Length: 329
Image (tube, rainbow, N blue to C red; front, side, top):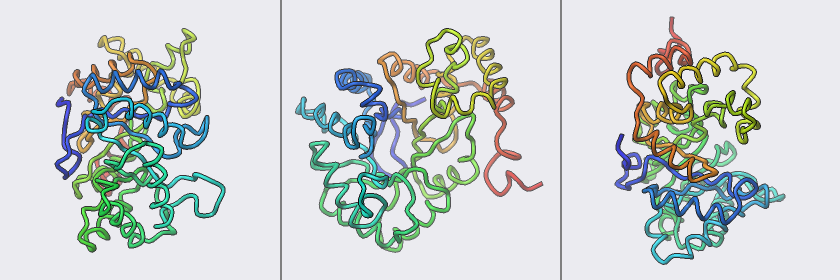
């Protein structure tokens, strides 16, 4: 697989692996975060993905501040990095401290720029849909930020297929570039994006950046790690919540990975990276070894026979493929 690709229909070159920073603050302290960012950049990963609310285990905004100090430590780093952050989730107790109103988008962008210590954000992503704010209002705010040079591209996260279509048609009406990327949860266990999100993104030339490609560690060798007492992330969150329902399948998955001589985490990542319409994967490493493992997964694609076996273990939704054919008898 190629290491770099274009971000959707833009000319921006991005690594197919993005360094996710959700663990910075609470799980990864600042010195270790700096080492991770150094290591990822040295290995060619040029996308650093964050959100204004990340670091909430310490305080919201903490992660952007950590990244800002890292960027400031080198004169060349800001030009080397494609910096992505997000807006939309709650940042304070006030009624206007969340959502996608023009007021909040612009105020949140200014606050992110201050925390990140930069003049511009490469990819400003709407963290979630806000049905109370019209697309005209959203695009008015984004157009202002782009015009001021504070934002280069606009992306989305956790959108449905019809949200992408509505956003893009509204942007087209205003003669704007619109949404260039969608960040969605997608993995062997969660295959719903195949129904409408991936087809909509492909139709509009929107890049798809996948978060939680291992379902919070469920696909990263969780049963073996629990037996060894080495489970960290996979012992909590969505992995722990779904393990009982998937235990037999996950056990068979881990046996199969052992059979082909590959680490389960690498197989899960390789599978996501092989899917049509997927631009890249946001990884959330806690160690440099996790970064190296993700790069190895990118460099070692799954074979057609392996894809067929994984499809048998984790069947696609309905009849497979996109909607509506996936459920038409």
